[in-house]
Length: 454
Image (cartoon, rainbow, N blue to C red):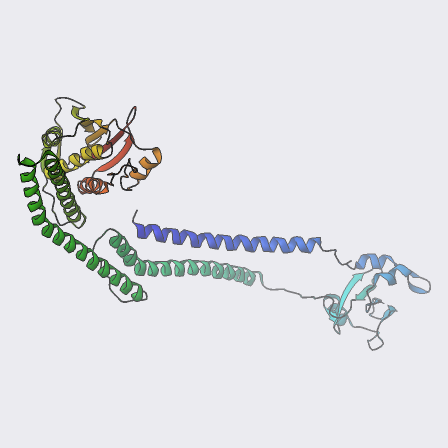
């Protein structure tokens, strides 16, 4: 998946997750408040029917028990109206209130208030009406009545508004995310290009113009730095070639001069070998730089993988192997024709570097085998030795792309040979191949290079 799309997919999913978390938090808050309300000791509510049960009508009129008075809150009062609207019994009723009420007034106070006192009423069997006034401000009473069709319209309108707002929020969020994606997409692609060593130049406009300008400056700085490094390596490689040729020439003459003592000739041989090694290192450094900055185009051509490996082994043997080392060649499927498209010089250099790595990392000597065989969709080259090998943690580090460490760090002439392995990795990558390291049985190191057939 495109990294830009993956980034904004995560952005959208994280935002949706935050919205879901917000909704869940609201639900938990509401539930928590309801639970808290239910857990709070409730205020004892007034029951008009229980109050009426404490009233009785006798020959002398209406009477109330002591429990009836105790049921009323402080500031409350009560009265009984006969069918004609006259007050026939009262308890703590304010003197300013009337003692007779019309049918309309009775209808109003039965549903609403009587001069700001919330009223609760109950009809008796004889037509009398018991009315209890609660303290002012202790109750809220509303009455709602509307046409059923209008109520249905209001319900539909509320639903439409709610859903329209939700859709609008989602649409605005997606539009905002799209704008951010358009602005951030080139920047993220530019960062990936810079990480891959490709040139980058972004348009310095829009909301993120400063970031684009900063990335352009960083890309230009990296390009100048890489160009300076490549020019310096090319210059050093060119300038060192002539002195090395002179050193090699004179060292060879001194080594072959019979008039010199044997010790002097041996010293001249050491100078020659070290100069040859230095020449090889300079050549490796120059080749690695060319591969890294694509200064050497690949010369792809159809190749016979078996013949390529056999020729690489032959060249290494012709160059001479130190004592204690053996080099053999093996075919996984003898007689099979394995073809691939590649640069013969680079692939031969790759195999030679792997063989020399086996020599460099096993100073006590070892047996080296170069193998070739078919693999899924390509050709597999293997270079195996039975030397000291590497511990599992270093193998894992190598498979992650770390440089090859020296296996003899305490030896006086031990050195890191990461440059040769770097070239191996660069050649394999240039041919769209894969490089892996594993332990050989019973001991040693096995390096496998898979290259596609085409």
